[in-house]
Length: 449
Image (cartoon, rainbow, N blue to C red; front, top):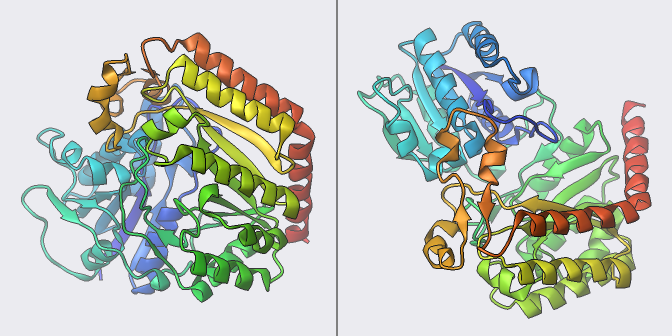
């Protein structure tokens, strides 16, 4: 059995993050490989070292020293987002220099949508395998086999392990209070690179057990369900909520849902769990919702949303609403229509459970459906500012990814004003958010006790 080192690729050209992202995907790989008897180590530079700041050479030197201290036969590098592309190539190059005979594989969203980025990186070709899709079974096979390295990079299609075989291993060295209960998303929103249409869930019993383990590990009063879309299938969703509610939870589950796919009785089942829900509404302009491919019936989508928010108010369920601005195709009129709708929602309701509006600027990522739509939207002035920003070795990739123009008439002033209005709304509902923070603090103290 070969020894495996899993490394989260660093973000070499991001200046700031609101919080270091959880590496739940690494925990899944680590736990599955351990369950198969593999010797596994894991290293997450983002957690251990943060961002590089102004000392990129010193940062890479620290990463090299850490990798050099861990013997490995197989190096698996995760490039979860395009922000990690250059970091994954750097880690691969370090791994190849430190262990020339080791087998190197890279996986994650970026390799899945652009495998050619790893087969055309110059003469060195640090990776032997570029894995598209889930990597559990492929990495397990690498660990269990003694096959030689291929002569040149090979792109392989990964296959998932059955979800009920994925069990959290308590020895995972980085604290995690987060879980995946499902895979895939059948929707094709224009801005999203998650284009796996197959959707599958754990059994209810296994999903509840994983949540109880995450609840036990929580230190901040929350545990996070990281599914791209929670509870898409009604029978599973309601069975899971009923079963989870039978157990006393110390933390509050945090989950992302589509409000237009929830039924009124779902909120009665959600209420005992005291969840914090993220509703990615994105826009309240029917025209913009069509462009985003969020729904084919935007008026019905918004009506269903209002009914869902009324049910939240009725049962005391709290939520955050995500709003996306400056998406390709957006005009000043669409942005104004959307912002005014959310503003009226704050004043006229239903909004008793509203904790915040989270306004995001559209960021371009490769592999999303927007690529097929751009030629048509370009006629109205839609423009991606840096189409290959992830390959550019300079800061700041986050700013570069957002340096786009929704339409020829949509100016930075329009976008900034919309964000300002939503942030003003957040100030007005501040007491609710403070109450949430206080509740989380009480729950965290209960864990420590």
